Amino acid sequence: MTPIVFVHGFLGGSRQWQKQAEDLSGFDVIALDLPGYGKNARLDALDSIAGYADWALNELTARGIQQFHLIGHSMGGMVVQEMVARAPGRIERLVLYGTGALGVLPGRFETIGTSKRRARADGPQATARRIAASWFLEREKDAAYEDCAVIAEQCSLQSILTGLDAMEGWSGEERLAGIEIKTLVIWGDRDRTYPWSQTEQLWQSIPDANLAVIPECAHATHLEKPGLFNRVLIDFCAD
Image (cartoon, rainbow, N blue to C red; front, top):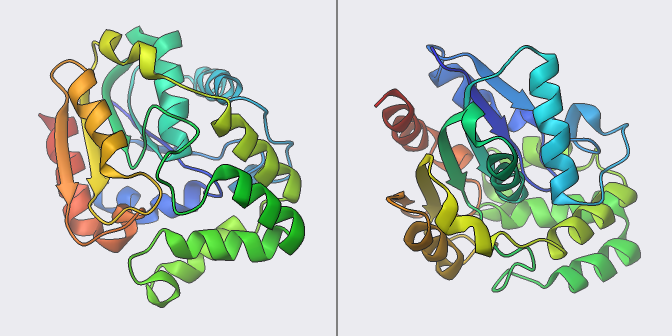
């Protein structure tokens, strides 16, 4: 069966996909840790979304994985859009989850510039915990919050600032209409990071894209409602 590759978002890591790996046991699940994040937090973060895409494709090649389904969350959704541009023939199904085509993140709970200033003032750990709380409808009260906050706390100030710079300098708008891979767009309807306008742009601009809106969820739908999220994902990848 075709492997499913998961690419996490800003301040994320491979451990965030454990509930998906459990439910998708019929698939070979590969969850990457981008440089500067998660299990690769010791590595310097890269300064561009394109750089992360090249790293991910090279990492998959090194693991002997040539064909795969691809899911990207948040900043990881930007990374996978770049991966599609570079190697469309390697990707069988594409899932763009809680993401968009504009790296400046219009409508985000705070601007990227504000995040940079607060990160410098507050330090990496406080920044990681504060931003991680925004991913959940119930913020720190969500059962999955603490695990996500611990993963986020692994990031250095360099990783945080470089990641914000990489997103801010990226746009994939001009390439959306050229995506020919079967695509699913997933969005939590209470997302504070990506408003509906970003989701709608993906859905309307990518030819024949499918859309799944998960109700009463914020930015971490795969953790807030993992059963529903996983069913949507399995149905799409197994179809």
